Image (cartoon, rainbow, N blue to C red):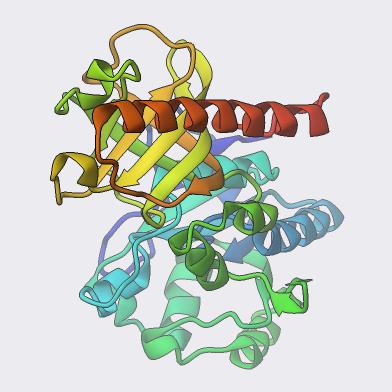
Length: 342
């Protein structure tokens, strides 16, 4: 079974065989061209965040692919088409492209096809997208989509049109109703609002993996070190940054996973106004400068606040560390046989 991530060519016709995208951290395969010859079962979508609604679609995709004896593929886009159509109004993504592909692969698909998005692609009419991309490039033989699926220029194509096109080409189509949690549909926009509010208790219930920020560690002002709580200063974060506050989290380094207390926002106690993301790895000692750090958020501990003295701030940081450690340990006790962090 193929476990691979591939990228489709950016040729104007979009008829070329997908090419391999080889991020070092992902297993790749050169078998896709031979697999493609026999066709595949496909789910098309942005899959931003890879939430449990997406998981329901992928689960049905795997059933369809097994029943038809076809490999399964998730076909997605990078960047999100809205970043091309509305570059000034497109929200930050919930996941990086590599993280999204990894989470989709964990759901069991045989291949993740990542389509580089450009003006040529978003200008394709719905019929042309179906003919040139789904038939010509991917060689789809069966489709599984959500009820609100849209495709083509201006999101003009819906599942009714998709059904008619599939029938014309002798393809099967299964449409999945939205997954409801607490009476509301699970969607990337709903999760985006929760993350923006810092509500990870609810957001993580809707995601297939805890919400993650990935960033490069650079040298900061080293204020935390002078207070006895050294922090890793994260920069170049490309996904949605949560609301200002202090959070319990798990930090993932090359050497392992560490409970963490994370401060997001300006360091107002020292007169700073610029946004900073500072991560204190509990129990860690070492140099993280120049490395990439993954941080999985668990819950918000408190709002940011200004302290009148370094001593008062240090005392609060001590309480934050205790609360963060308690949050991490309580979650591990709830799932003793499974690691909830990736």
